[in-house]
Picture 1 (cartoon, rainbow, N blue to C red):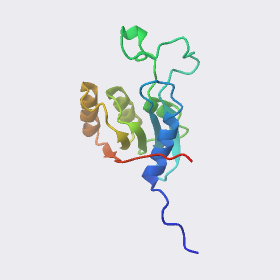
Picture 2 (cartoon, one colour):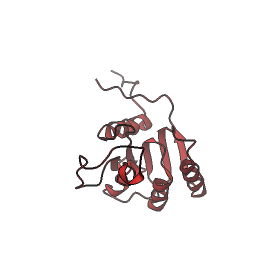
Picture 3 (cartoon, helix red, strand yellow):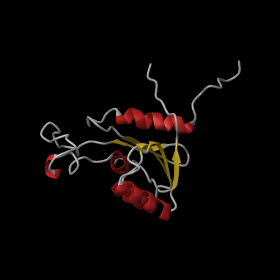
Picture 4 (cartoon, one colour):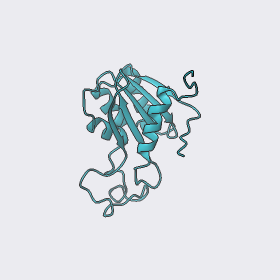
Length: 156
């Protein structure tokens, strides 16, 4: 019997894991997942956006508008940062699979960590100034960017 030919690509496999990880996020507006993958296709770290370990997210706001101190923004750790912090081995030269294009703060962490490629699904905040800074830094660092269009994750 010949092998099955309709298996998913590595990109779709790792983006599927990132998407599944995003489903752990409690953020009511934007759920993001990230997976760091070594050159030999081994997962080194996984993360999603949420409050820092040990912080009871029932005592903080998930709001995105209002006074900054009363919103989620000063408290939430982004998926990319969590994936880097959760990595179990050296990640220099790795690829980052992420459901949403990284912000400027995450771009700095990605560059410092030595990640060489970002594969992403959505760039829905592309008009935001922080994303322009992110793209400028990533380009200057020589990091490859690849958008995967028409990505879906079907859970049966």
